Length: 342
Ligand code: GLU
Image 1 (cartoon, helix red, strand yellow):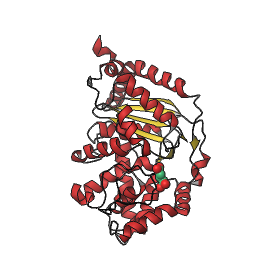
Image 2 (image 1 turned 135 degrees about the vertical axis):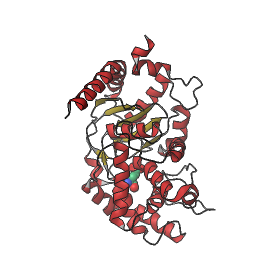
Image 3 (image 1 turned 60 degrees about the horizontal axis):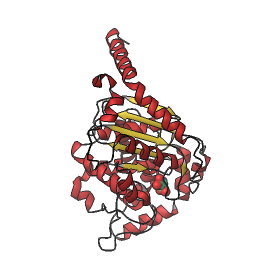
Image 4 (image 1 turned 180 degrees about the vertical axis):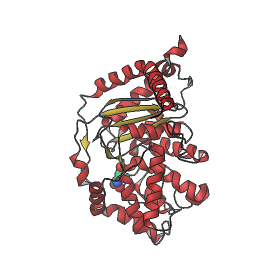
């Protein structure tokens, strides 16, 4: 490493350390507060997921400027599952524009389960891109000359968000593929109504791949920070998504991101977020923060029990709700940049 680069790195590390202390303390306290929670159950309908350790628990935060804070099992890898859905929706938007995507998938919350075999009776579209039907339809919209190119474009897109190459967990992928009968049924129903093309079986494979991508909760926080930063990864400076689409991802996350708890989540927590059955939650405070939580025990709706608790607590603690009147986030800023308030 050149001297210049080394100085730059030292400066960055120094700056992060001096700014980190109060927020690090807050994360440690949250971790202690919820580490003994034993509610919920690890997902087992995809057999490979049942192998997760119920004790795993990690929390990460990355600011829109790229400062990162972790506590607990922040480097344990797990499959992203449905937390991938907003980002593939983003890729579909880039490939087809807003109306092109809206022809094939709506943005209405649904009271149905995430894997319900149901379409809008009037438009025949899947309700939204956060349920399996909508996610399979958006996967179908990912362009590419052939299957490997489509998968490659999807993986490259995630790599831009997280700031490093990403990999698919082959065992999870195979497990999803072998047991994915409901998803295939959804694919066939959508094919019947022309919502997916004739190669939809390939798109189902693409969907299984996207769900099986390995991430850490730090990666989820970085993905969130990238959206918080208008679509540019704050550490690498690489754009992950066209800025004009960021607001669409965030609004569909706020209205539909947390399974059948989405309404109450928007009401109580008020932060755009998406969870997955692997136990991950990615949450975004626009302009401010990305939050990643990982804990594999899920509640009856499919959300990570500890993940919901951590995000709720953070929202209340720092007034992060989207419709909070006093949204200057002073208490958060004081923890991030204590030197400013002195
Ligand atoms: N791959 C999972 C499925 O299709 C994703 C479910 C989820 O995380 O909501 O069932």
